Image (cartoon, rainbow, N blue to C red; front, side, top):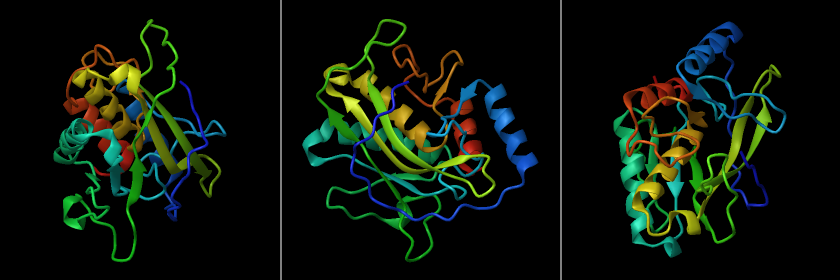
Length: 223
């Protein structure tokens, strides 16, 4: 997995919650045993189960630049809609930069911004994956260490889609967007047959499965 930085971030202050260590470990063990993988932060620590952004079921809004075109915007709305109907606290920022709190499963408290995840396009040359296909998405992110020193929670997520990999292939485009939604919920990939969030996306299902949604709800704290 390639991790890149150098993307300007919008700072969002999130206060991490205190979670019993035993409960956290059991929850994460269930997710991993079910065939899913969580990301690790720069220090090699996994996110806290139930609060990958430091707070449970954090509201996440995805943003695509106007230059990306209506097709990508429509695909993002479709994929994020699948996640929201499956119980995830996710939405899409409107083109004018506004956002409707009621579009989220659980709106943030008044005066508290949601987490914004801008999805950008990369015209560079993607690397080749072990199965011989080209990478479709790469993640830039930052994380902070939890107060107990056992985990790292996200403070920034900046995914980039390789245009040369997704251009002209709506299916691959949607699969890459599902991987982005999953990352925002604390899940980086799955080894299950038929999953919609396999890291090597070609061959993934064109939908989130019920198992995918259950793993994301568990890791994000939206159960």
